[in-house]
Length: 155
Image 1: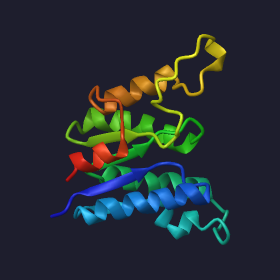
Image 2 (image 1 turned 135 degrees about the vertical axis):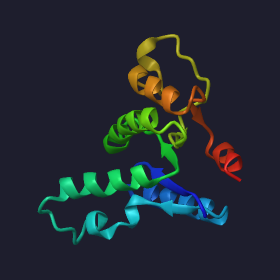
Image 3 (image 1 turned 90 degrees about the vertical axis):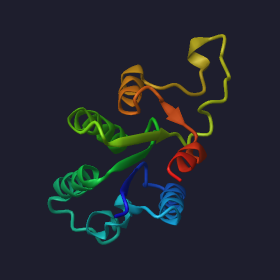
């Protein structure tokens, strides 16, 4: 039986929606079932979504997707508040379910460039250290990887 991957990441811009669709396609091509929250029109059709209880439905639907996944692939972006919240939930879940595989990548083009500013306030990219600690824990010390490396690891 094929394992299920939950794709975690920003989906609030057209570009990020295309990114999540690309990730879904890449993992399906490898034979995985993929849970992509943006496909859930009951909560993510922003034009027609029923606003009554929307927040509660988003939490219920996305949490169910996370809990039923065998693998989580997360795109860490500093502005993606829902995704960061999900990472915290995944931290607790992984403590209870150590076999859960978690991979984190970052589509922010400034991440990983190696540009070290001489002035602290001129850093072009930084990660909150609490969040990075969570990422390190859930990835078993691996941290943030390149998406292609994750795809290769899941081949």
